Image (cartoon, rainbow, N blue to C red):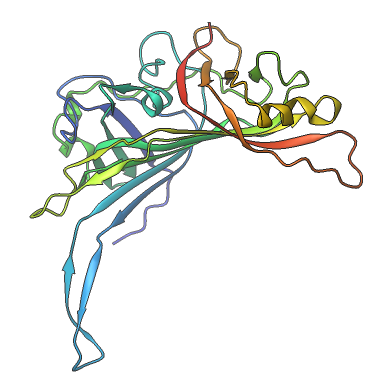
Length: 302
């Protein structure tokens, strides 16, 4: 067996017709970004090795429920207004939008230079994006799935060849400084750095008599924002908000381009904690706040 030396990895996805149904019979395959930096598919067999009091060795192995976790890291790009990678088909939308209390179920085709993996029943468990100085906005998204198929060609997967091939997004990468984190009447100097996190607290649903999960379903959503606040007058306003919360909405924009940059609104946010630290050599006061919100909505910048 030869070792293939080349860059041949890829990741594509599309919404399923039914949860765990795999690739639909028609539709447009999507990619998260033109710059996918890292992909990890973790498979757990939950094995049990049976031991006996008569020996040091195990005498058999049982294979229990399988768990599949796909993690993708990519640079955030502006969405399109038509065609592929619209605001409604971006992973950003699938991370926060629920219909009748449930998340959209996705199928992912992951290739590793000659091998192909189809993850069915995928839903986004967690999504995070830091705002780092002079860097692109890098998203890390974790998906839980219900079943995996393997192949040496993507065309082996049912319906893959009937789908419209994924396309290069081609739109601009969003970078720190292009957008903003704002709170009406607050944070007059702005935010130095921040990280938005979303957790859907998925639950794997097993069924006796099978190894694969029959579903993954979301529980409550947790919305978090850690940010370094450039304070005014030593941070009194921010501490007052912790002591007597006013829950003013926080708006996060990935950029400023109308209809293609992303916008998240944190509803009824409040401080979990915010240490007021003064130390030698500080030229200005920065408060590193831990914030949570009751809900989050996603749209594009208008």
